[in-house]
Image (cartoon, rainbow, N blue to C red; front, side, top):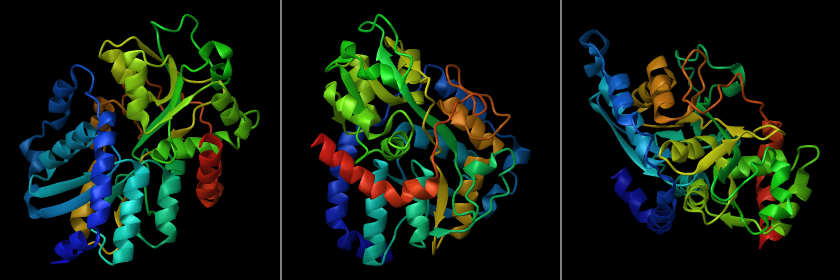
Length: 359
């Protein structure tokens, strides 16, 4: 009955979300060749490991911004350990996922049990509104302290940097820095995701505009150089692969996947540093499926879950887990960061200023 009422109340939201999902489906890309084999290998579980896994059953609802194929691979791995727990998924861009969460909460019936979206700034928004449950997973060993919320409301699950992807058929001299993209050589041949849709792009906006030598002047320079602002990282990836644009700001794993698929794409970690999101995971406060939600969080943060995360194509957040070829480990990344609280407090203002600049 709870779900039926919520469905009636949020019908308009769902309709809007479906439209968003059609656009964001571009963000779902095929994994590199061999992922299926890697997944199979990671999912193999001995009888001893699965013994006792039958004592939890039921279903949970996951809201996520992770690409469809990737989240399904993760769920398949989880179900190797917990075959009787069904995971239902709603996915869209982070900003749309959060809008849905807030609208459902306002309506008095939040359907999600677990959230897995772009960045810690987003989770700070949810934390302030008392929408997250404190849970200290037993699987935190090996995860750097800075990726774990001090109140254990959320924990990073991977490290996704934003850098420069470029089409090798269109670019003779590879860019090495964010600053290079303001060069007239790239005039009208640039693309980036919108911070109004992508949580990672919103995080990047907050960090870059507060970084010395960049700031809002950098975004103005990109605008003056004719950069196109598209919906999400998937649109950027498609444009560069197709040769519609020469260069763009893009999430690392998407560029590497395209390269592994044979596309004429290379990825650059910029000299200035790399803004990075950790796609945290958290449990919704007041969930009726607390134990099932905890089991899912534990799996994602476990060695098995992190190994599968790496095999899907992401930099794992846990030390000691192998990193996919072409990506840097958490110890090798020169992070471009800023105070989370300041980013959180100014996110709406940053997006408003971006909108005014690029309208």
